[in-house]
Image 1 (cartoon, one colour):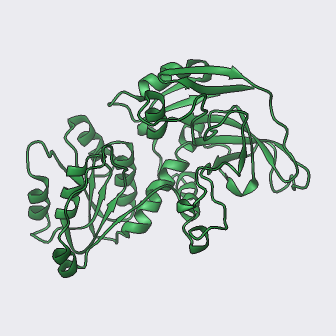
Image 2: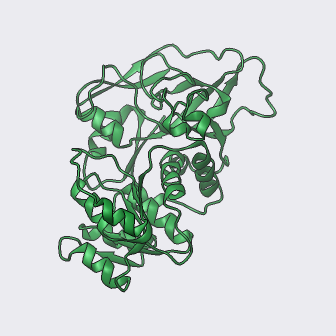
Image 3: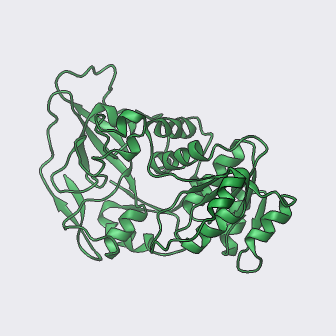
Amino acid sequence: MKVIAVTEVGKVETLIVDKPKPGPKKILINIKACALCTFDQRMYSGVVKIPFPFVGGHEVVAEIAELGEGLDPARYPIGQKVAVRLLNSCGECYYCRHNAPNLCERTNERDSIVSAIPGTGGLNEYLIVEPKILWKLPNDLPNEIGVFSEPLACVANSFNHGLPQMGDDVVVIGGGIMGMLHIMLAKKMGCRVILSEPNKERRELGLELGADIVIDPSKVDPVEEIKKITNGIGAEVIFNTTAVSSVAKQAVDMVAKLGRVVMYSSQHPDIPFDISANWLHNSESIVTGAVSPSILSFEQAVKLLSKRIIYPDKLISNVYSADQANEAYQEALKPDTFRIVIKF
């Protein structure tokens, strides 16, 4: 079978390894498509230091190819399209047992998959997995849409922390792919959505995907603009989807009393900023984070895609074959792309 591996910084090779055989209670899946997320880009470019070779990818859609002994074929039919939660959750640690499997102490272990070459595993042509990490998708859902199960699950987890209500003002800072998914979901929830984004094309796309108001933070003070729009109150929910710490400070400054700020993105570089403890005391606002998909949010994302409630086709920048993987990684690094998808 084919395996797409990063073998050194800036170099991808398609390797041939033995196709695995599923053991008892395991499933062999045939990965049909995998999107390249920010982690894959940082690993490929050397920003994230890891041992090579490394098989990346965790935003995948696959089909069930073979069942190990002890599994019911009526429950796991061959050819069934599935989304795969490739984030490890042990089920035994403190966080798993406190309903936060996305914070599992063994997240970076790969207990739920078997892969010939180390990595997150999404760019294996075939992969052995445990049934618990599979979610059925409609077989007629395009593979390029199915790969959004994982990123949309991350966004759903963000919403489960931000808790926007109908009629709320929701500010999304940053018009990248995750910002756009936040916009789409906030609009479906009946919120007034405000996008802060300096890029004109992304502001225009934000409007197309559901934003009611867009702000160019290079032309106006976004904090003051939010105050004007909300009659001095501030927005009920702020989602910061950027990796810029100075923008994270803006997110806190534009939230209303009793509001919620969700730091969705990791920070690179991570530059701390000050928050007034007295302001926090007096405002009763909540500043929190959201990392990775929980099991609940993965379930929610699969439903949203399966029922076509969220249909993120405009966020697919390009699709490449496995033999074009190096070109796919290179294009994924370009700042004007959203998701690049590799199909087997």
